[in-house]
Length: 476
Image 1 (tube, one colour):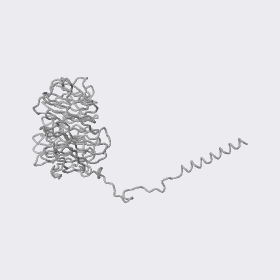
Image 2 (cartoon, one colour):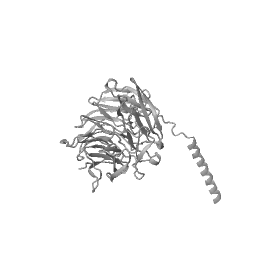
Image 3 (cartoon, helix red, strand yellow):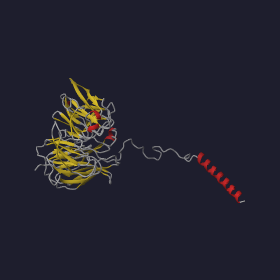
Image 4 (cartoon, helix red, strand yellow):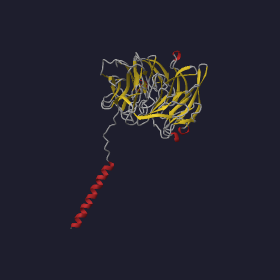
């Protein structure tokens, strides 16, 4: 009897199990649901803009209203006033570090990123992201001691993407202009921090936010902010006093914003803005008579990720480079009357010649200096020198024991200053014939020390991913 009872229970269990399975298999649990579409819940449809709710410049805090700068001199934006990353002030800088080590005047904690400083008459400007409050903040500091003077910001959601802020402000005696990670442009009074205007390039001009947020650094010329849009307009100029767009360059090829920055150049007797957009290298007139006119476009060198900016290398030639296997190219701009045409002279992979993933190379005295990409073969991450007539021919390299990663470098007082990823600052003798180290020391603890240098009065402002410091390089 016990055996029959057990069999009976087994068959009942199997029967109900089959019923449950068949119900689960044929039942449609979403039959009564209705698709959610914009307007169904009486809310307005979401705009295609990423940041409709952003109120640019809405927050302001003043920390010191009595500040009187004791220093003059400027490094007014990316690569300095000459857009060449060469420091030209007549101030003697150290050849060797003091016995007690680098003299760090001040340091500041920063939001995670690589946004570096601009300096103007004793004030340091840096765009920082406050992750706790979720704000882009333009911070104004004293160059002499790092005291924060004021900050102007706005709320915006930014997720970590190997850092957040990446751009350097542009500043003159009246205005400071920033581009935030998600393409918000803000113009403030350079002294007081008062908001002048704000523009959202995605919302207002249909720009496409770059892969790793905005890397483009703005420039100011004649109180006009010059911006690469890559949406409705390719480039445009905005009056710093009014916020009005005073000129625009059409974008018929639908080129997109890269991480590169606009560089003013004079080529074949014509002053122009040169920009390496996603899709093409372009030249746009910077002269008053036809400002904003697209002069030429070159599409042969096409990289998916572009961070370094174009470099003028003499004889009407431009060097462009990018990482992730793109390599480099040399483009000559030919002129016939008022017509300009690009000619590709050289194009190669990173293992074949000079190429950079992040920093923009320096041209001086007829040669080009650069830190090689990680995929450059035997010269990876080394500091190298090439002649511009053949950038596949390396004239010299730093030793294999001195590889610098993706850190910044500069020419100052007849010396190279080169920062490694880990914060070691190398001083090397400037030369076009060999590489000679004078000294090196740790100047900042941490990692990813990639933000470009700013230097004036012999004081260098640099950073890693989470901290900014000011180092005194004066020889006295």
